[in-house]
Every structure is written in structure tokens, then in C-alpha cells.
Length: 71
Image 1 (cartoon, rainbow, N blue to C red):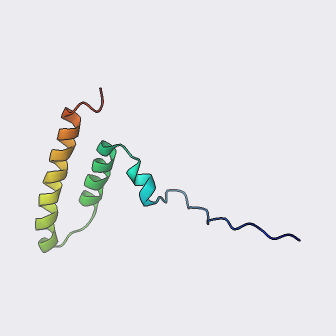
Image 2: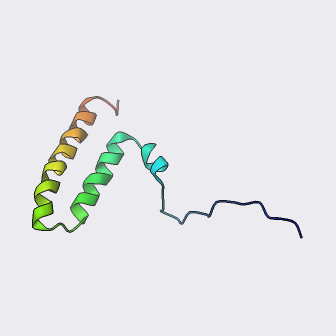
Image 3: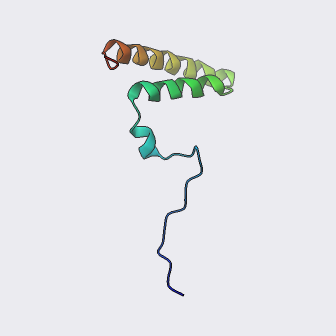
């Protein structure tokens, strides 16, 4: 009986780490943020802040699209 080499635990399907997310295209990252913002329940105080960040994310998505990333 030999010694088993140490291996990192296998990731569950759908689970990702920060490195995976950083490798995504910026437009996809923005869309994921927008989707998370819309699918989360926010209290009234938090929503006032989230709404501002949501508008910034929409503006950034438009800027990426205008920059010609998809051409």
C-alpha cells in the first residue's frame, strides 16, 4: 500500500473561483453582475445604492459595446 499524492478537492459543477471569473470577457462579467443585481432582493436603503451602481454597470456595458470588442 503506497502513499497517495495530495490532490486538491474536486470542484462541484458550476462552482468557480476568482481566477475563472477574471478570465471572462468584460462584457460577460458585466452581464453577470447585472443579472445578480436584478435577482437579489434589496432593502430600500440598499436599493438606493444598488440602483446607482446598476446604472454605472449599464453605462460600462454600452461603452464596451461601442469600443468594438465584438468586431
